[in-house]
Length: 314
Image 1: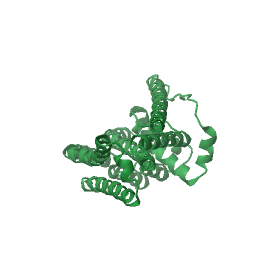
Image 2: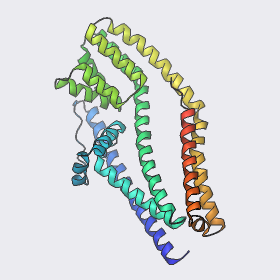
Image 3: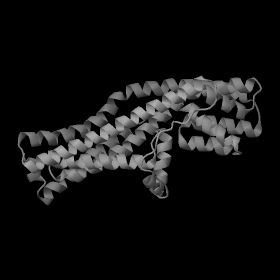
């Protein structure tokens, strides 16, 4: 390994270390904010105190929010529940892409630098999807308890708006946070249809759509809200158990979908370790570059197909 390659690899590792350090500081700040919010809830004040965290990259964040990409990114971040602005996430993603670019270029071959950068962008998008899906799953697990609280409140004679506010105070995140947003929208004059519809758009799931439809129809036409919520609670409990069983049975398939591309990348490092410079010579021609791109595309297609085949909608 020559001096230029060593310097490039060292720079990439240093940049990646800086990114991890920034992520660690951000995680620490988020933990302090969550602790402050928990203390505010336990003090029975009914108000969550502001975190007070100083936002970074404010100018970039303002400019990014004006673009279509920035608005989409903001909606995705809101759905994930992460305490990160679009500007902060964009900078963190660029830093990770640059680090992966330098590491791939130095550790394998110059041709793999751009591919590693594209992999970093895909990993960032996949991270947001994973955070969003994890939050949706947590919210779905809280739906039986939410329906039970609403049923008890309406049976006690409380209005549906009041019942939603009470459920927002009693439930933990993410259900408590999302219901607080619904309660705030109702307090400033939004209709029940619009507030609950936005909730279903933020956290799309069949279970939530059924609950929202039940509440909207009951609010419009009246009827037996309590009995409908009682029956819905039992149904949600059964669906919760079914989803848990399916997730357990498909855990091996899920791990396989991630193991396949990881094995492909491991083979590249193995080839370069067995014979140094083999990847650089292989990607030195157009035919070799095309073969590498096709191989990566096939691994990506295999990952997507395995995930699609193992997806079971309940």
